[in-house]
Amino acid sequence: MNEKQYVNAIVRKIKCDGKKKKEIKRQLLTDISMRAKQGERSEDIISRMGTAKEIADGFNENISMEEQKRYVRNKVLKIAIPIIAVLVFASLLVYWMLPKAADIERSKYFNKEQVEAAMKETIELLDAEDYTALQKNAIPQMQPLLNAETMSDVRKTLSDDWGERKQFGAVYMVEMIQGNSHFAVGEITVTYENVSATYRLTYDEDMRFAGIYVR
Image (cartoon, rainbow, N blue to C red; front, side, top):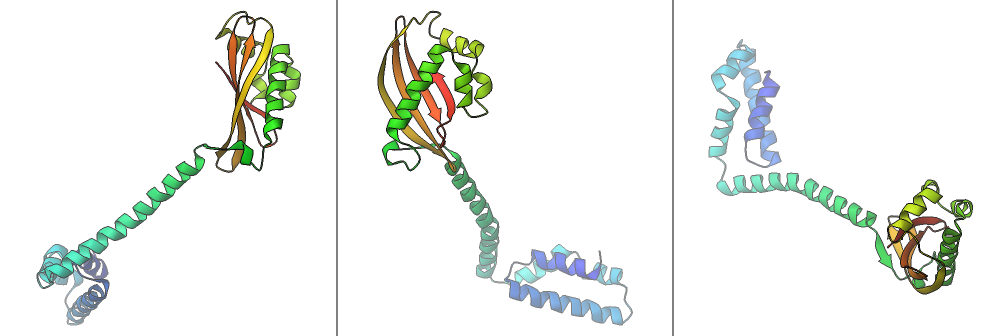
């Protein structure tokens, strides 16, 4: 450990403000420098002065408790404030990324009648098993799922035989906002000869088919 490292180790343990620390550091370096000029080796000077903790404790004995408490409080704040800032940022990021529902009638991206028409058209194409048309109007992530095998498995969760479609029920929809992305999400119950199926269908800002859930 050289002189500067030794003095820095002392100063770090002294509980006072930055201005006073600089003055103590200057005094210590000056003292060591003068002793070195008189022929003492750095190792001997450091050894005779004592450990960094012992020197720092000596200084701390002459610093008021009020000033030491203020030093500790400020040190904690210096550590805590960046942590709090990171946590706040992380919370805001999570909030920003979480989906949030909004009234679709006030949407700048979707028209309620257009979404309802798209939902009914999607269901008609599913019933007709026209997967080519469905894939054409779907986002890339959806396209591999729009096939006879996958959709047959979906249908079987309700019944092996749905029968013919009888009628569409009422449509409920919202706009979902996730980050900078906007989606129209609608639910509609469709009556078939042997079962009633509730579809939850999702469309992106370009009205591309982006998600399906059937129960």
